[in-house]
Each structure stands twice: as C-alpha cells, then as structure tokens.
Amino acid sequence: MVNFLFVFDVLFIVLQLIIFIVFYFQTIKFDRTSEYLLTAIALGILAACISLIHRNDEFPLFFGINTHKLLLALQLFLYSLEYLFIFMHFEQATNKVFDWRKIGLFMGLEGILITESVVYVSLGIYGINEFLWDISYNLLGLFSFGFATWYLVKAFIFTGEKTSLYQAISTSIINLGFIIGILATPTIRHYLGIDTISILYIIGEGAKIIGATVFVSIYAYNPDYVERIIFETYGVLIFDLNSGRDLGFLDVRTKSKNKRLLEGINSALLSSLISALLDFLKEAMGAKEYPVAITSRDRVLLFENGKYLGAALIAEKETLLLRKSLRKMVIELESTIDNPDYIEPFREEYITTLTMEKFPYIVKVVPDNV
Image 1 (cartoon, rainbow, N blue to C red):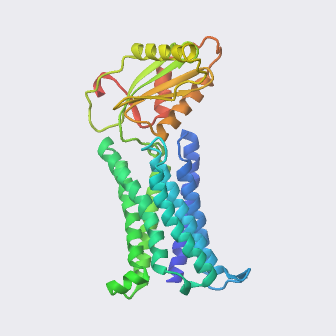
Image 2: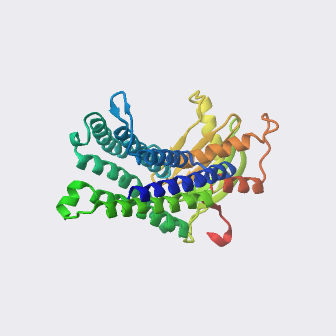
Image 3: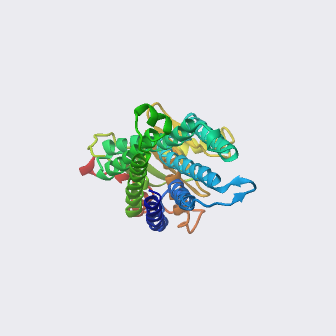
C-alpha cells in the first residue's frame, strides 16, 4: 500500500502544480478574485509534498522529537488551513463580513487537531485520542467542502449553469472522501466490525484526489466561474465625486436561468439622489468621507469611491465579492481620466465592456432578456 500511495502522492503533486500554474496565470489575465483559492491550492500542494516525505520510514530525531510524527502533524495542519481558505472563498460571496460564528466553529475543530498533534509529537501515538484527532481533521474538511457544495448547488439552481453542478458534484466526491476517512478511524472501524483499513484509506484518499482535481481544473479552464453570486443585482452608476454628476449608467441583472420581470432602474433619479446625498453630507454635516452603503429592507446601494469618481451598485445584499469587484472597476476607471477637474462621461460601450469584465456574474439588461 505504501508504494501505491507514494505513486498517488507524486501524481497528485505534479497534476496540482500544473493546474496551479495555469490557474494563476488565468486569474492574472482575467483579473479574478482568487487569492483564497490560490492560497488553498498552494497549501494543499505543500501538504502533499510533506506527505510524500512522510512515506519514508527512516527519520532522524529533531531536537529529541521523532521527525515522522512531526511531519504527520504538520501535514494535517496544512491541510486544515487549506480547508479554511476554501471556506473563506465561498463565504466572501455570501456575506459582507466573514461569519465569525462559522469561523469560531472551524477554529474549535482546529484547536482539537492542534492540541492532539502536539500531544502526538511529544508523547507518541499511544498518548493521544486517535478518535478526536481523526474526527476533527475529517470534520474540518466536511465543514469547508460541505459549505462549498451548498453554495454551488444554490448557484446551479439560480443560474442554471451546468458548470456549477459539475463543481457541486466534485465537492460532493471530496465530502465522500472525508466521510470514508471518518469510517476509517480505529474506533469506528471497531464498532462497525471493519478489519481492513487499507481499502477504506485508499478509497477515501482517491475520492479526495479525484474531486479536488476536477474542482480546481474547472476554475483553471474558465476562471470566470471563480466569481459567482446567488442573488439579484440591478444597476451600476458612475458619478463625479465633487459634483455627483452622472458619468454613466448600466442596467444589469445577475446571470440567471429565469427571465425575470423586474422593475427597471431610473438612472436620472438615482443620479439626483446621489448628488443630493453628497451635497448634504458636505454642507449640512461637514462630512469629509463618503457613504459606504445605504440599506433598505430588501436592497442595498453600495458605494466605492476613488480619488475623483465613485461607483454605486444596487443589489439585494452586500458581499465582500461585490465590494471587491466594484473597487476594481473604480481603479480601472480612474486610470483613464485625463482631466480630473472635469471628467467626461464614459461611453456606454466602454462601461458595458468594463462591467462585464469586472463582474463576470452579471449581464446587461436588454429588452429581450428581462
């Protein structure tokens, strides 16, 4: 089994390195928000390299500590960090701040894993509770990829894009690997009467490798799918920060499988509102900062401001992903300004192209697709 797993690790590392390189250059080319995913993949590759070294049975003592034990604990720790960054990638598309209740649950499981790892390294395998150690590690993976599966299924239901379904299937396969990993723990095997750990371990590891390869390969092939939201957006307005003057508007909707009869956005009214709001903040309240968001019961008006101009987006909710996309748009727009004292309105074609580039999950509204 050791030789078989050694080959598994080598193939996995080579494949993941190739995918990582392709994915990295793709995200740079298309300017996609993928820092959490790239970090997760890098941690996974590093953990796999440590696993490869860990297959060796001959290790020297390192400050009196068996290196074999140290590498195993480090390997599991890196994998757990990988799962945290996977969770953060999908969490940024659903909330405006990270949900610290979920993070707290994750860190609680992480704390059990770290504590048991320290005991394992210092006292040896007989000094730890293997059940807690194995369960906490596999539950960390289930927590992250279970959340990813939930999100991807919601994305498929909302957008109808088959790619989201393929992604959900790949993360479900990974989840299956973690469930099998739980069944392979000595305590559960004892109660289930399972004597052979080799088959369970190989099946579980194989499921994780296959699922992870499909999961990352889809993103590497088409990095636009790195960014998806599962709620409605309504319009993007560009305005002059000094005067509130309308510099361009685009009526948009989130990509969806359904044609929705939604009320259009009055760009002139929105521009007047923003202009009046900026004047009020400056004159009546003496505010030097501009608003970040205005929230109603079912919609939010997000603001992202540069040095000379700002952008506003109407959506059903605020998320970190929307905020990042809006910020990238403002930076790009300001780089084209020739005269900041009087900014010329932007052409609709340019705003359309730029919006589709920075928000790959929304489409321009035309009479045929509303």
